[in-house]
Image (cartoon, rainbow, N blue to C red; front, side, top):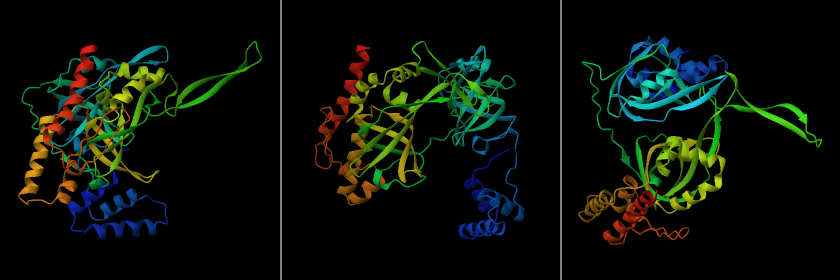
Amino acid sequence: MIKMPYEQILEKIRSSAAISEDELQQRIQEKMDQLAGLISKEGAAHIIANELGIKLLEQQTGRLKIKNTLPGMRNVEVVAKVQERYEVREFQKDDRVGKVGSCLIEDDTQKIRLVFWGNMTDQLLRLEKGDIIKVQGGYVKDNNGRREIHLNEKSTITVNPTGEDVDIKEQMITRKSVSSLKEQDDNVELFGTIVQLYDIHFFELCPRCQKRVKQRIVNHHQNEQGETISEAIFACDYHGDITPQYSCVMNCYLDDGTGNVRLVFFQQQIQQLLQKTGAELMEYRQEQKKFEEAKQDLLGRIIKASGRANKNIMFDRMEFIVAHADRNPDPKKEIERLQHERKQLSVGEKTLEELQQDNSGLLSRNIVLTSNGRTQVNTENAPLNAIEEHLTRDNDENSDSKEEI
């Protein structure tokens, strides 16, 4: 079944019919009341679309733009450019070893993860960043709220096909302060200091569908000492007993002087922040104590993080889901930004409050960190060379650590 997100349904109805947001929401609520709670808001929106003669899905197979792909679609074709290529991992499936890998692709509408299974991973290894690829026979799946295009043995990939081009417009990422973050803000960049960092949480996934799996206890028996021994196995709701694959998540708090926010990093972003491979990251699962040194290195570090704001309903708090992490911001670029902000202030183009809301809070930061001997510069009064020295020091320390490795 093809699943269209609720917001996308509303956008399609609004763009196709002369109806206001309030009127549309009212009609959806009336339809839900009319059916006495037997239908979801998504279902009610589908009915309203049908009543208005609006076809929500113009095309379900064949060539599509990435933004028009929906979970449940099959035999999908896209043409896109490779932006990142990730590692191929092996997993145990019954009595044989399987393989899975992925890359990030983008067309002129959106980015999406492309997942390769089995022998298709051989083609993944031949891809380079910047390659244009034509994907045929893919199917779209939902992975914890994120769309992915999956490829199996029946799918095909053509690299740099004749006559195909992908014109990607540079995506505008807006620098914002923590205090100005709003729910559903996307393509946003934060710049601040890590003031609290939590341990990495590892969790089990089904190697076939990438869904979370549950542990269950089987085969209770007693050893020679009379102690009860229990064996645990992992089971997927769709694929039964499996040997799990591991992924991870990590949280930290970032403070930019206007406020602080909880940042959420998933595996690829943790690797970016720690500058570790997937295999090196998994070593922390076996021995969390090894993570302490990396944790101390990150506390007090100034970083840039781009991604989207998200409201965590369970804990009723704003969080920031990181898409890309930069642990070594370019000092020259940050100083140029700060100089530009000060110039705007001096000529009266913007007030300090406006700059704090629209940009990164640099002009109001006044934090002192002592957890690892680093001090955060107060950029409201500090000379620019002192700020540059602070940023450069982090970069130099990172370069030294690379040389030691």
